[in-house]
Structure formats: C-alpha cells, structure tokens
Amino acid sequence: MAYHVVVIGAGSTGAATAHDLALRGFRVTVVERGEVASGTSGRNHCLLHSGGRYAMKDPESARECIAENMILRRIMPDALELNDGLFVALDEGDLSFKERFLAACEECGIPAREIPVRQALALEPHLNPGIRAAIQVPDGVFEPLRFCLSFLATARRNGATVLTYTEVVDMVFQGRTVAGVKVRDRRTGQQRTIGADVVINAAGPWAGRIAAMAGVDVPVVPTAGVMISVGRRWNRMVINRLNLPGDGDIIVPQRRTAIIGTTSWKVEDPDFIPIPEDHVRLLLASAERFIPGYTQGGIRGVFAVARPLVGRRGVAADGRELSRTFECFDHAADGVEGFVTITGGKMTTARAMAEKVVDVVCAKLGLSIPCRTHEVPLLPYRAFYELT
Image 1 (cartoon, helix red, strand yellow):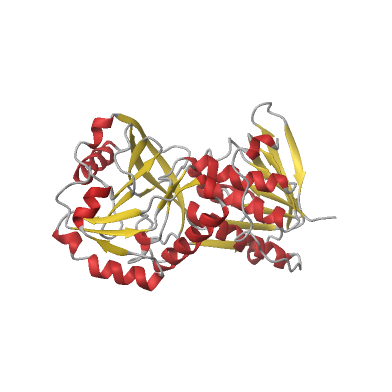
Image 2 (image 1 turned 135 degrees about the vertical axis):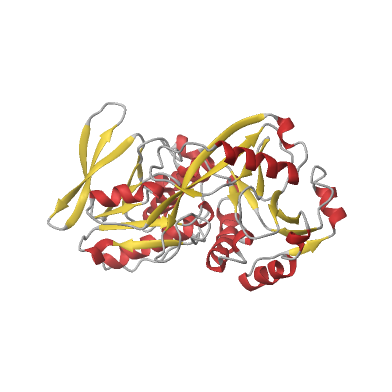
C-alpha cells in the first residue's frame, strides 16, 4: 500500500508538491481552506521571474528563478505568456547600475542584453521617452489560477484528491508523531480526521499557524505588499527599474490590465492587511514615471497580500533585506516526526520547492524515488475540472 501524504495548502507550492508526490507514487490528499490559489498565490504580480530582480542583491534566488523559468517554459506552456522583460534606467542614478546589473546577470546565468533606447521605445511606445538605457531579460507572465490548476490537474490524473473549503483545525498525534489532521468543512461545519503517514505544511504566510498546531516553530515572516491594477494593458513586456529592488519599481502586464507594485512591510496577520494610503500614492507616482498617463486606464483594483519570507537571524524583518529563496524544515529536528514545512520562495520556484520537500519525505520513509517533474509536461488547467 502506498504511503499517504496530506498537503496543507493549494497555492502554487502545495499544488506543485501534490503533483510531485503523485508522480512518485504516493497517495495524496490536498486540503485548502478556500478555493485553489485563494491565498498569496492568487494575489501577486503574476511574474515569471528571470531572476533579474535579484541578480545584484540575492544571487541564490536569482539562480533558482532562471533555472525554474526555463523548466516551466517546457512543462506548462499553456499557462505562460513568454513576453520578456525590460530593465530601464529612468535617471542617471539608475544608469550607474547598468554594468553591475549586466555582470550580475552573467554571473547568475541570466540571459541579458542591452538594447538601444529607440528599440525599447519602439517595443513599448507608452514608456517614458526619457529613459536612459534598457536591458532585455527572459521575464514572463502567468495567470495564477491556471498555474496552480495545471499542477493539480496532473496530480489528480495520478490519483491525488483535492479538498477545497477544508480547513485544518488541529493535528492528530500518535505519541510525538503527527499521524494526520483534523479538518472542518467550511461549507457544512462538519469535522473529520484524515490520517497520514506524513503531513506537509505548504501554507505560505500561514505556515507559522499550522506549525504551531504541531507544537513547533518556523521562521516565516509574513511581509505584505500593495499592488495597483489599471484597466488598460499599457505594456506588452514586463517593465522593471534598473536598480536594486524597491517600492513601485515594476509594472507587469496581465491580460488587459497592467499592475504596478510593490511595497514591503511586515504584518502580524496575513488575513488582515490594511492598505496604507501613502503606499497607494507612492505606487501611482512611480507608475507615472514609467508610463505617463498610467492611471488613465482607470484603477481596477488596489490589493495587498503577504509573502511567506524566511526569517534570518540578525537580518531586519522589514522584507527588503530578506532573501526570496526557500527552505524546507523537517520537524524531526524539533522532536516531532511525520511533519515537514516548505516555505519561502516564489511562484516561479514552486516546482523546485516541491522537489526539495518530496526528497525530504522520501528520505524520511527510506524511499529512493527520483523526481521527474522537470521533464513531465503538465496537463492544461482546464483538465482540473474535467477530472473532477
């Protein structure tokens, strides 16, 4: 009989983890308190990272992003728009970063090339005509729900069960081993127990709450960011500022909209994120520097979401200084068996995060089953509903 693994969370990390587990032959149950991608995964920039944003300051994350970017292009083309990105210098201060940026991209393996300003303006006619330089990188765009559904559809085809509106309310223990979860159906209020050989905590910024149910701690720092969407797709490519990552330095096209983001600050409760008015003003002013007239498309939405960043001893928890890499925690080291947390990272690195945590699960169970998610194409997202 196959080992049974419960995955908590149906965002990008949980979805990719379910796919990897099912592909390796595990019985899998995914539990999600809302709908698929209803947490952080469903309210983000939708950026398929080239790694360029992190090349100068966070090279580990940059290398992870470019490696996974290339894999995702092969395995889930139906969910991606491969439109590339531009890093543009808005002033002389930005221009001073150009050579450092190009060198950092080369060091991280990110294809980056400077193109003439006139060519950049021909590609993006709504860009500020006063830009001083432009560098093209292989950024892209995804639709978050389709991204997650592609992983879950393929997991379902391989036998996984996906339970939405099913909230974990407690852990089930046998001694000091987690042997399952107690869940509540949020539609009916009924509670039941789901047994498991291993429970994987893939709850994003809520991972700390889930870990506390098992009596352990994970250094997740919920870090919020505000984004603003307007009702016009001003840019075809992703537009980044040629500088270190900061507030209001990227505009991502998504379908018929354009999204400016983002800000960064630590929050206590990822379910309650008041949106500061000064953040909104800052983002709108920044957007105008990139694309004069940005708000003429009409503001469609102002939204915020918490990132699940991994805290570091001695590093300020304000968000900008924390790495965007990911970590896996086997809580056997904390005296609790059968329970593993995977957190941090980006949607772009979800597949790699899944590979890491499933490798840990296999090692715990004495199994030697190689990961194949880097080579197995995913089903189209629509198949998720067809397989229901």
